[in-house]
Length: 280
Ligand code: SF4
Image (cartoon, rainbow, N blue to C red; front, side, top):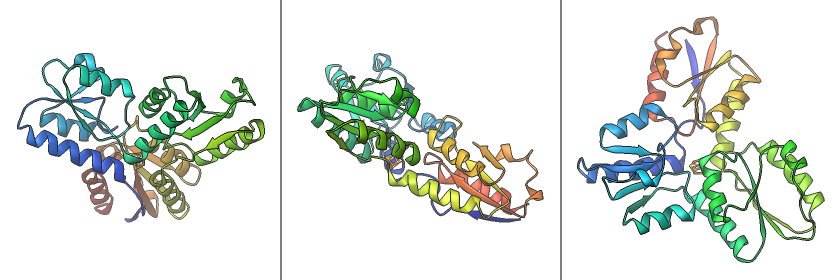
């Protein structure tokens, strides 16, 4: 069976860095519990591997009772979380991606000088919740062109605009074009991460030259879902979390399979899929 792995697939720089720091801290703590505020990444299998080593996932800092160590994941958090941790004497291992930290700084700087903050992205995504926290939870959050219609913006105010790092570039451009027309004073920061763009571009190119695509990644991973939606425009696309899910798919009817993976998919899961497809 012929197959090709996308040029850019799997862990991005920020996730790789976060997972390495977390692994190092868990290993150093020698069995002592370390909390993670939310799952480190949207990949069940990888999270389980870390849990077996002593990582305990909590949803709220209130749950941090038995240990004074906590990992902040690559999505980042609001300033309040750092303050709460300090107040409780919790040592924080911060794995926030440097690209997300940059957005926190932009937003905080804008608020400090009295500007309004516009955040393009999904209001329920942890990255956006964290970013909005640095805007005193007063950011104007816009995900779609529809959202834009329901928001009243003051043309006399100064705005600063940032975007979720995994935002769809096309939607971003459409919204920014309208805002540029409506607002006279808006500082625009395209904070979409190039890792996301590269993954999407490579997947798009590959999907056009194969019979079907396999997209590996967590069902709740937004960047994996976007890869699936891009590939589906060109060929039948199967999204899986683990190799076993491919066993019921008749891949042999396709001449060539393309493989890509979301930014939170570990190498060992990609390798299992490659090895299975290669064995067909
Ligand atoms: S996708 Fe980009 S911003 Fe997000 S963790 Fe990876 S490198 Fe950082």
